[in-house]
Structures are given as C-alpha cells and as structure tokens.
Amino acid sequence: MTHTIFIDGEAGTTGLEIRERLERRSDLELILLGDRRRDVDARREALNGADAVILCLPDDAAREAVAMIENPAVRVIDASTAFRVAPAWTYGFPEMAPRQRERIAAATRVSNPGCYPTGFIGLVRPLVSAGIIPAGWPVTVNAVSGYSGGGKAMIAEFESGEGAPPYRAYGLSLKHKHVPEMTRHAGLERPVLFAPAVAAYRQGMLVEVPLHLAALPSSPSVEVIHGALVEAYADARFVEVAALEETEAMTGIDPEGLNGTNRMRLHVFGDRGGEQARLVALLDNLGKGASGAAVQNLNLMLGLSEDAGLV
Image (cartoon, rainbow, N blue to C red; front, side, top):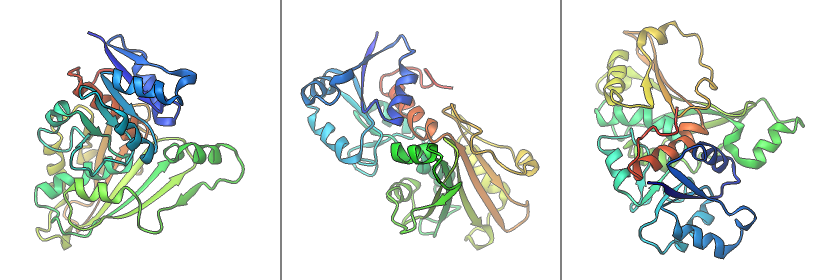
C-alpha cells in the first residue's frame, strides 16, 4: 500500500530535509505542487487529499493550514511551535514516556518537538518522573546550535561571509518561545531558565543541563542520574546513553557528531562521588530535532516501521 504525503512548506529548510528523506521511499507518494504551492485552491486540495500532511510553516500559517483541512481522515504533523502545548495535539517525541509511541500512532494531530526541547526533555523528564528532580525545582539549560536552526535569514547571514560572529548568545529576554514546551513536557512546574546560542557551523547541537547534586532533596549520585536515563531509554531505537566509562575519558563533544542521523546521544559528566553533574544531549537540529523526528512520527502514524527511511 502506498500512502500519499503532502509537505506544506517544502521549500523551507525543514521541508527540504523531510522531502529528501521521503522521496527515496517506494511506500510513499509525495504530492508536489511546484509553482502552484502558493495557490490557495491547490493547497486546499492537497491538504484534504493526502493521507498525511506535514506542515513546515511559520506558526500563523500553520494555524491557517490546519483550519483549511476539512477531511477528518487526514493526519497532520506540524513542525512549527503553534500546537506544541495544545491539549488537543499529541506531542511527537516517541521516546518521551511509556506508551507515547502508541499515542502518536493513534493520533490525527501531532506536534513535532523543537530541537532544543528534544535535547532538554530527553535529559530531564526521566529524572522528574523518577523523583530525582522535583517538579518545582529551578532548572537551567544552556545550548548551542548550528545556524541552520535560525531559518533562511540566519543561514544567509552566516553563509554570506559578511561579518557574522563565530558565536552569538540570544534569547536574552528570557522569553524564548521554546520555554513553555520545555517546561510542560519535562513535567516541571516553574519555567525553565533557557540560555541558547548559535555558532558558525551549519547544523548539529549540544543541549546541557548543569545540576548541583548535593542541593537536590535526594542528593543523587552521578551513577543514580545515569542509571535513570539508561532505564528510560533501554528500548529506544534512536536515543542512547553513553556509558560512564566513556564520558569519563572524554575531553569534549563535537556538536556535529550526529549530523545526518535521527539519533540523540545523552551524556552524564561528573566525578563519581562528587556534588555536581553536567548532562549533555548531542543531536542534529535538522535530524532528531526536526525532519528526522517528523519522519519517525509519520511512520508511527501510518503504521509503518518506526525507522523506515531513517538512520
């Protein structure tokens, strides 16, 4: 059986990456509008005629596209931030919690996670669920991404060779649009303190959560933190936890280390018996952080192998 897929916004960075992953597959047929992609009637027909729609649009445009869908059989994956905390939408992070895959598979509306939130939630939610980090605990997350995550304008700035900085901290107002998503889906009760940055390389990211272990109510050890993550992702195809012996020997992490894949690697750094830890997630912001995650969710929603078309 061949499923028909329409990518609304296929000309954008995420849309192009998704199309590249899907057009090589024989089990899927893409609905391509070409020069008609801005034609409202053509879009409406495609939105209602596909088995599944993937929206790669700005927030307001995504809301407009969803409003155009009248066919109840159409399944929708939205890659914007428009619906990531909407109660009627299923959050598309299959590894986030037990039975999350089943929820995604049964859903008709799935919100694709953000790249930074994927790393943060992957690190923190298992610790909140296990009671290691209290839900009301103040949590900080530092992160750096390649410039492709900033969209066409940022890509043009960094690739023009006309004075883009090697590193730029942003989100300085502490009101980044990912904060509600991070807070809610990690199971936290107070807003996350999010400190993002962009660097002069195209894609790949590191997401870091520093912890004062001795300050936490249970004073967990590095081994306890690591064990909780290992248990949470024991059966995960695309999320792995580096062994403590490996992290103890590491002197750095390359943020481009998983580029081109749908994988995420979690690390727990810290002195065994010490009072501090650094939790670090490595992923491709265009892979597990965007297009790869969308394909993974699509596979689940269509009843296909979860890893079809993914590495």
